Length: 49
Image (cartoon, rainbow, N blue to C red):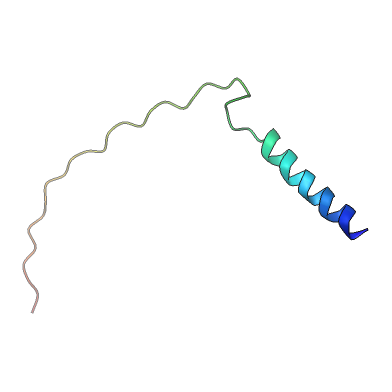
């Protein structure tokens, strides 16, 4: 009985991974690429006492 429960849980985990919406097998369009981050100038910092 314990082996059946372990097998059921393992098969449910495998089915979840295989049926999850990863985008590769659902026909959904891929996400657009991210735009580059802005370049900021460094802020001068005075030493603290």
